[in-house]
Length: 118
Image (tube, rainbow, N blue to C red; front, side):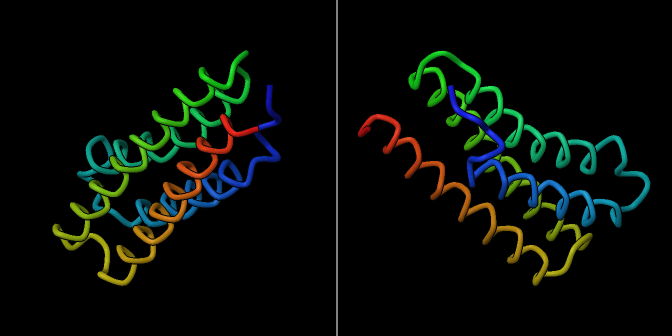
């Protein structure tokens, strides 16, 4: 088992959650149960999957949850692109969030490789 709070990916995901919540707070009120909610659920899922996987008994199980976290990051990226297309966020905000999601995805991939090279 791993201590998820010490894993840098979880720490970065936690920061991303806060940033996405602040960005989605500015979405139109009619999106509260649509794009706002979906984006928030997806970004929170990243953090939660890392934490849940860390508590699993095997590295194979952990890797499975890291895959789910990766999938959630791709979902966040798609939702942020959509928010930009709908002009809910600026191009700059979109690029900042996409850069952070991309960084976390790369970290997840490297972490998964290292899980099995120990």
